[in-house]
Length: 162
Image (cartoon, rainbow, N blue to C red):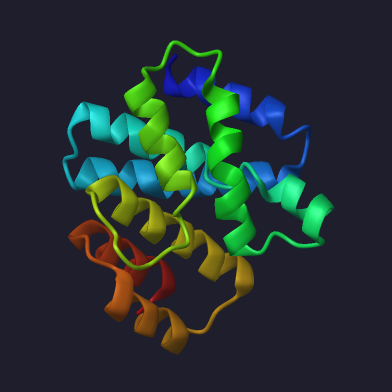
């Protein structure tokens, strides 16, 4: 399946929840941009984009089951959900495993391994910072501690005027 086909599938899965759809589309946009600026290989770029589209797949379930979309439950519930979501695609088990790993760790800031993981954290943070209205000082501190890609750092500084 292609990224446009998977995007269409994820939008349908979201059942008209505009906030969730807009969130994952923004994260995907930043992730795609950073990945391309960082010159990721085609396979890693595909995995990154797919993980960005599906990273919050568990949010509706978490809001229903736990009363909020707390990050630890998103990760716990998200990995198996994304496996089910991708089960009927032609994607290889290796791709599905990596996407499930990224979805299951996208708020875990320790032990980050791989450009796809790092960029997903950066892209999601950029969108979350805007949605939550975080201040420049808080954003700058997070960037100094957790951003690693040249492109992600340049984009967030430009977006937030840091």
